[in-house]
Amino acid sequence: MPRPEFPSPAQKPVVAGLLLAAGGGRRLGGRPKATLAYRGRPLVEHAVRVLREAGCDPVHVVLGASASRVREEADLSGCVVADNPEWEEGMGSSLRVGLSTLPSGADAALVLLVDQPGIGTAAVARVRAAYRSRGSLVAAAYDGKRGHPVLFGADHWGGIAASAVGDRGARAYLTEHEADVELVECGDVAEAYDIDTPEDLTRLE
Image: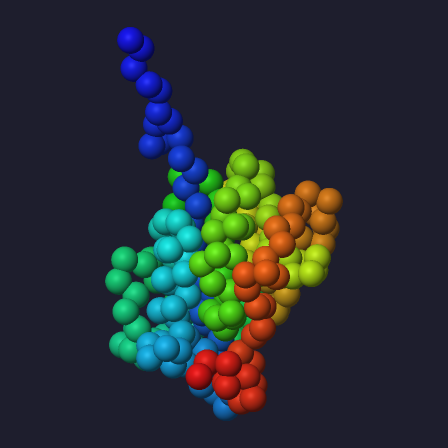
């Protein structure tokens, strides 16, 4: 009787989780978003857990504002943690730093923002599951409108890094390649709000 064939573990795509957590919370009175309390622990820990539970491995975290404080207060064990000394330039600089730290063997990066706790494991897992190749571009959608998280196949990393400036992140690149972006509707399992202002802090209670 022939032995059943199973896919080799080496064939499983490596989708790294990339958490951007460098923001200084300017509109929150200078409170770093990564250290905001959520369910009794720093917000950055929650986001790391979401990435892991959704199947992202390894998980890389980019810190910026009060990076040493974040390291002291949050358990980031098992993560690759990088500092962005130019975090005040905006999300683009953190994205560039994060992409530069990813292992060459990774097939894709799934990018999550630390200040969107309404996006949980279910949405991240959906986006991750849409990976097809190193040329994949995938984004979560909310009522058909593109949002986060986003997945970048490795073939796109160079182009994204080159265009990631200011607070736009990968927006310009995704707009330029809009026809190639697969949208995955996540509005039924997630809420894509940001924690930006003191009023938004009620969402963390």
